[in-house]
Image (tube, rainbow, N blue to C red; front, side, top):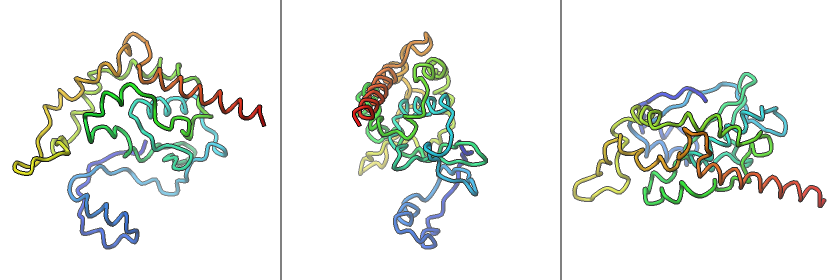
Length: 216
C-alpha cells in the first residue's frame, strides 16, 4: 500500500480541477485529510494479464472481507501495478458502517457484499490459510494502536445536534469494545465468524463458476 500522510487541504484548489465531481469533493473536504503517495507511471492491475501471487490475492480478499471493502471488483479494481508489484489503493468504501453505528451488528455477521465480483477471487489461494495466518494478528492491542493515530477531530458523530454541534464519540479506547466478537477466536486460530461466512460465499461462487464453465 502506498505511504499515507496527513495533509491540510485548501478548498480553494477546487477551481483548478477540470472534473466537476472532484471539484465538489475538494470544496467539501477542506481541512485535515489523509493523503496517499502518488505512484508515477503505475497502471491498473488486470489479473487476466498481470500475474498475481495466489497467497497475496487470498490475503487481499481476506482483508477486504474483514473491513467490508466492496470497491475492489473487476469494474473498479483499485489495484495498481508499480515497479512490477501490486499496490492497494482507495479504501474509501471500507468500514462504511461507521457512518451509522446502528449497522455495525449486521456488518459483522453477513458475508462480503458482492464478494463473487471481487477482482482477485479467481486468483486467490485458500482463504482458510490466509485466515489462519492473519486473524491472530488482529488483536485488541493492534486496534488500539491503529485508533491512536486517528486525529481527535475525526472522532465525531456524523449526526450533529443542531444546537450544540457535532457530538464527540465515546473515548477512542471504547470504540473497539464492540468488536471482539467480530474477531472472536482469532487468538485460538479459529476463523472469524465473518470470514468463515465469506469463505463459504467465495467457495460457493467458485463452484457456481466452475459448473457454468462445464455447462458451456
